[in-house]
Image 1 (cartoon, rainbow, N blue to C red):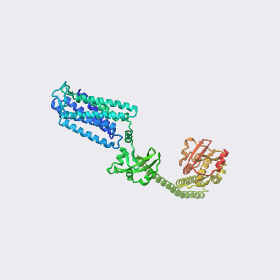
Image 2: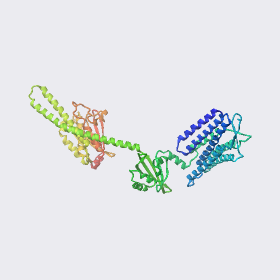
Image 3: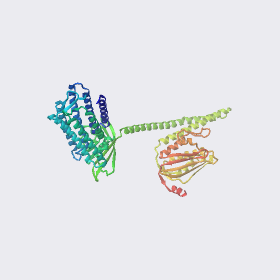
Image 4: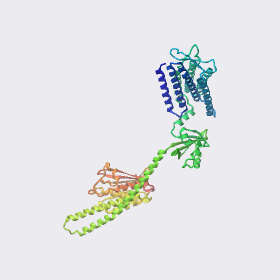
Length: 604
């Protein structure tokens, strides 16, 4: 071997060990195999130093580190094989047995290291290089050499036996094939290493310090096997532990008395981090939440049936920071018998914080809207008096100057009166709009036939002036706000008559049911509206014509839109220029008299 090979092996082992550990630092196999890779890197570094040494005493110095590192490698690999096979899996005290065996083998390993590395009576380093390499002989004629040989033999036997147990426990055919070849491979390779580097070295066949390449191959393959256990181990308990470790939610499984049986790492960190919490049942843990009524919560989950789940929010203080969780509880059944509960908690702290912010913004927006509504009401109300005075004084001024020979004076006064009246009308409509927005809608029985009759009465002079007609089919009695219904349909009808160049303006109103909505169809034969403006016309102060063409303020349809919204509905426009418009008013209201609707259905 050369320096470059030693450097390459050492570098690869360090990289693999670090990568394997960082993949899942909390998983036992990742921890143990990362440790093995680092120990083999130590063996490689020691052999590299021996390879470069020129003096016998330097080799003697590194020999102790070399033997100790290999002993640790065999210990950890043996324990990995033991945890992989889980020979005491069916025993109720498996965890205690595993811990006891781990402690026992660790103590034996330290004893072996003491006798071999510190006393250093197991090997003899040859004083001269053989073929350019330092070599050694094993002492098989004293107790220390026999202890070292026995230790390695026991570890080889343990590894081989554990792989055989894993093979015998497997029921799935594909998995049995995998584990059989694992048993063969990881019996043959350690046995070969045992004979080459421990059993054979004697006066006739000394061995050199070149075990690191074979160790490199062995531990790399074993590490890959253990870290990809899904390919070889379909054990449901291990699979469940992997799932629990990978989920980002808190998972706790209890017995029927709420004693904790299984908890994932995240639940352990959040709910059971304090020493005093580790022996509490789950109800005692949840009782620390200030917004959860434990008695009511326990009663609710005890009443669950198979397949049902109970959901609740709770808060928990973690490191002096309050966190919010959404908890889902289900009962665990085995053969129709209730054995326990499954608790899964999702961290919704960021969502809860955003909800609080949104609620705060909504409250601020509502306050601003109320202020604007009050301002609109007060401003429009207070402006009416001075405008009324301006109009009155203009009338007085016109009367006083009616005999004035200058014709421009009367024209100027007429223009001023017209503008003052337009502003007065605009303020009236703004006031009306603010009242619609702020009004608490009181619903009552409303006969829509009476509403249309009242509108005809209100517009009788306008209808005569325009030679216009309003036609409507029998309309139902609904639960709505009567004043707003009059406003809504009077505005729509006035629009249909105002923006109408026909010799006989006509507005037709019909009604039909569409799902959960009662739809009023208001159709006119007016000038129509370009599709580009179908949505804009419902915005306040949006006008499509100037005052010289058609008078108006741009508030009427905005009022209609708000009234429809107050009745949980929406309004749509279907219109073609120079043909007419159809307003489809969808109201989610209760029909109190179905007779008109039945008449209409029979007619259709």
